[in-house]
Picture 1: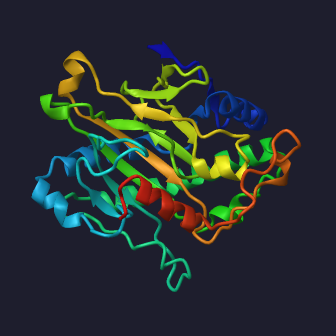
Picture 2: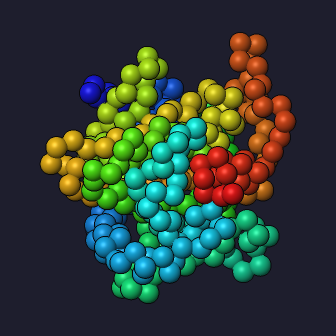
Picture 3: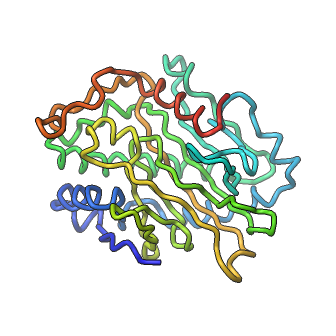
Length: 311
């Protein structure tokens, strides 16, 4: 398996050059790697500990936090629920979702459910509320660099993501047993949202589909975060920034007996944001693919049905 030679950029040291560097990485791979991202390492370490504690709970305990009909938006989603678009085998994973706590009386409350928190894991609420806030801050900085690269004002995305429907996912891929059949940990897919910020990719398995049709492994150095483009940003930019297909393959040998954990933060637009293709991304060679405007929530609900999280 060849390695994707994605440059590792610094959110601090590369500040002046970051828009051009991250834009180049995204256009080449649909992915980037960022270090010095500002998320506190002690907080991350504590989050891993609590994540493992939660997923080690009995299934019947975890199922107390499964909310039918909500599309997995909050709380627990059981093992082998989600399926990649177009796939037949459900993914070998279970996960927990933390969303945004909206201010009292928010008009967005109809599209964003309140959080639920497990009583069995001490410090879970406090730890993941803070981690969510730090992910949110890092994501806004990255979007600012993307805006500049696209020829927009550095604050263009600020109102678009204010009280956005972003979701932090705590992911557990259990050891792969004999009964997996043709299923893998995460089937080939593209993310729905604007950008994804991912912690935990140091464990082998994450791969992207190169432009030549070959799978490339992603191996960030310790402390670096993997960033990838989602379909919402691809749509907004008229495919100037591509949403790249990726997967998590099953481990081989001794690693098959081990769990894998990761923490993606799916950075979303406001639910009421209307997609209008950026004029900067329309040209004679690249005409507007999306002349019909829909809201971010319309788009999200359509995609949740496609991946089996909503009926």
